[in-house]
Amino acid sequence: MKEIEVEFPLANINLDSVIRGVSERFALPLVRRGLTHVKDSFLDTEDFKLLARRCSFRVRQKLEDIYRGLEVRLTFKYPLEDHEFLLIREELKLKTKVESVGQILEFFGGAAHAMLDQRFEVKLNVEESSTEVYLGKAGGILNVSYDRMRILDPRQTGSVLSENALEIEDHGIGRECLIEVKEFIEETYGLVPSVETKYCRGLRLLHLNPAASSASEGA
Image 1: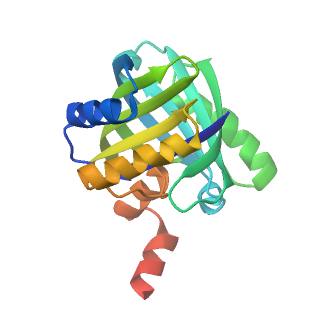
Image 2 (image 1 turned 60 degrees about the vertical axis):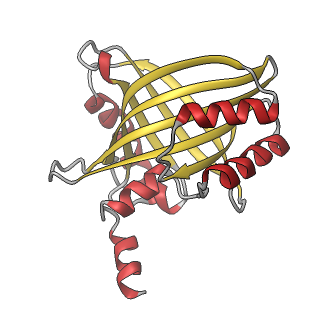
Image 3 (image 1 turned 90 degrees about the horizontal axis):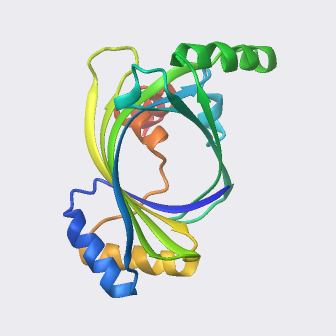
C-alpha cells in the first residue's frame, strides 16, 4: 500500500488545538479518535543494509498484549520517490501470531543469512503511545497521529530518549490537500517537517549508527 505522509519531529503541542484548527480550516469533521500503546523493534543486518537502502523492517507489539503472545504486526517500508518534505513509501504489512520477537528473528534472520550472509538483529526499540485521529468523510480521510515516544538502545545500555512527533497522512484526501494542511501546521504551530524516518532518527540520536557518527565527526 502506498503511504504518503508528513512527519513533524520535536512536536511539543496541544493536540486538541491542532485538531480543532485543521478541522475548522479545511472543513474536515472528526470521524474517529483512539489511543494505542505499542513497542516497535526495528530489525536490520549488522552493517545496516536496510538503512542504507532507506528501508525499514518493524516488528510491532501492543504493550497491553505483550505477555499474551497475541497478534504481532510486521511492517516493511521502502521509498517510492524522493520529495522535499513528503515521505512517499510502499508499506507492506503482515499480521501474525507468535510467542516472541525471537521467533521472528529466527525465521527472517535465517532467510537474510541465506541471501545476504548476514542475520537480522534488533537495532532500535521504540515504545510509543499514540493518539490517532481521523478527519474528513468516507473516501477523503486525513489521518493525524501524535506519537509520544521513548527511544531505547536494544543493547540495554540505559540509553533512552523521549520525544514527541506529529504525523499527517493521506487516507484519501489527496496529496494537494495534504500539502495545504502541512503548510497550515507550519505557519500556525511553528513545526518543521522532516523526511528523516523514525528509524534513522532514533539511530542517529542514540549514536547507534557508526556510519552516521563517523560522518558527523568528520563534518
